[in-house]
Image: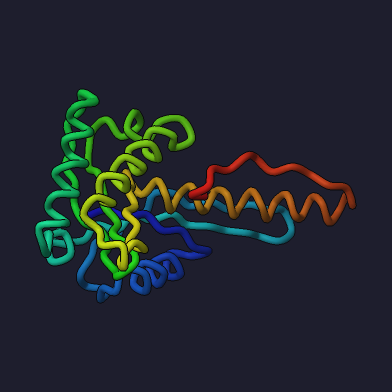
Length: 182
């Protein structure tokens, strides 16, 4: 599996990866994607890394429900005309996070994630057929190339930048429209 993380330093980004993935430092490889230094008087730096790790234990479906969701998602992608593999990233009582691994990730994601959101909606409607009314809180989340995390980081960065501008100018600003999931 591959995931991307960002931090002020390489060590900070690696600590975020260790905390989020629950892995030990020797269980993954680190690839530095980007280092950025900004500012004239006050240096602000950031590092973006890519983590390569083996996630075989989580990615194996535990029951028929998970197997049918993975099969349905794979079928939707193939009916769109693309090839892809679907694996489980995370499972909790309230959500099941699936990762779509494909060479056509830009098309699967779509502009501002619209295609990915549409596929996710289809998968959640399909899953609703199998979920008991008592357990209706289960939500299935789809991701491609860590798009959801990157998008969340961009939204937060934009909100903080806009808040800073509002504080200085004392005038209101509009943020970009967000979909309900965001």
